Length: 574
Image (cartoon, rainbow, N blue to C red; front, side, top):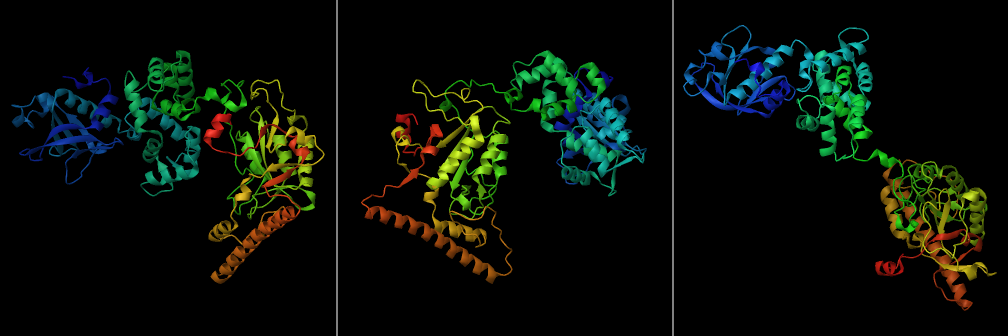
């Protein structure tokens, strides 16, 4: 029987896959007197076959095989087995010219024997081209294409590719790899230690970066012929595996023409393993739906119905104890789509409000610079409203300056129209498009119209900072003692000089602890003095802060309130 025409096997690619899955066969000893049952397996890299169990761990290399015999030509070898097994189940693999140098096997069925004979004969036939070692799905079309790519980038025509040439080729083949990844793979396959890869090594290199077993399994599952996907096959894959129920044949054809690298397959309207890999690695193959890059939700519901992309301590680039503050942090957050940023506002020098993490060693930036950056970048990636969450620790004069900056710099972009009493529901993101809202403490209407300044509760997180614990954390992290935290200071990062000895380090850490404790005592002392003064005047301490009317008027629809528990929030819809 001509096994090449055995209809029980769909394609040579199916043979190779079955061989890689393994087949149970009887192995005859060299002298043909003994035998044992083994499981024969084709290596994943297509370079040889092995069997288990085996103490020797030997490998029969494809390169050394000369022919695969079956039928009448092997009757003499298997004569002792023909009473129990069909001659069609017998295979003899020859190595070189020595007739005694052979691997003799008896398969469990004629179909299994045909699979191994067909698969091995194809591998032996292809071994003249070193590219047969790439992968069992890489047929002659692929070999030709890969060889052409190799020769195109072999500029000096020496039959090898240096690392830089490999990197350029990888980029041209649309394989996403960093230079370090390419270099690592280059070293893995560079078996001869030269500074370049020959065709054989390059074939292994390309296989290692382009073939993924799970993608091969998908090709096997959905391909009609086991090697390529037609438009219908690809549509079936998208609908059944990817859940893309709206994938039309027109879309599938467009994807094939876009991601299939070989021109011959494009003409046939087929997608090979590389084309499928390219598609799955592209944005089209992402789990994320690229159609959702555009707004697709209903944005006309109340703003309170949405989750808001928010940033905490937005100004910090690193840790919140001694890290640098930067205007760039706001720009980066806004460019990433953040719609609510935080500004911790404190009194600075020369009457300029500043932003930093209070009672810590983080550096300070000007409030004005942040607002200018927000004005410039607020709506670069989204039209929907930006909320500036103010944590206000400033004196009344600085609060008025903050309000002035908000109005002057933001201009018409600042939404400070009083709440419309006729609104029956909270306005929507659509309503607030291209507007900036201020979130902060808000005076009662009668207080805003009163001549005296109003009081608001102090519920900001800076009031809860424990200076003792913060000092200990800073000491543990190795922060310098210079620039101990305070409500004022230069608007520059705090430099930390290198420690030259343990004694000096210990001394500086002790200085840091003393410095930080001193700051904490000073802050608490000032608060106590203020409380005592109020008590002497008949007042009563109620954890209240003064709020400038000008700043309060900048706050309308979004105000800061304390969290009193889930039940309270549920009852009050907050």
